[in-house]
Amino acid sequence: MSLRVGSGLDVHKFSTDSTRPMALACLDWPGEIGCEGHSDGDVAAHSVCDALLSAAGLGDLGGIFGTDHPDWAEASGAALLAEVNHRLEIAGFEIVNVSVQVVGNRPQMSARREEAQAAMSAALGGAIVSVSATTTDRLGVTGRSEGLAAIATALVKVRLGT
Image (cartoon, rainbow, N blue to C red; front, top):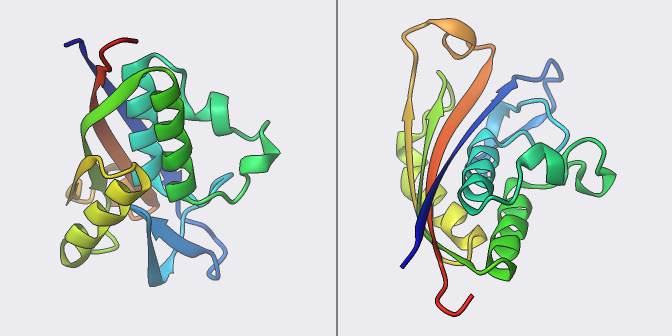
């Protein structure tokens, strides 16, 4: 069995538009101002996409879904994850597991961690997804509550016969 590891990082600033909905870890967060971005600004989903693409050697989020691809404007994190999963399957890879850590002061992830894991797992066709969160003790962009970041690691395997 051939295993491959990939990592992903995504950072978005909070929107100045107070009506921008927050999408994070494939969930909607009512009452929270969302992040700016070409798609929905879901840093957790975006970092997982990059980690999976990196592990499989299939490029990166910007190259596949970036601003020069208008069909993906305002796309949900779940739609991006599903497309990445599809691309991995076509290329002969299977997701073993994914871990993502959200970095920021808000929203509070702990109460919705299991829901986030289930939503991200569903978007990836049932793959195991672990979600955690942390702050940076008021340091940097996330510490000053200017935005959110997420760091992800993915483990994939090459399917036998490919």
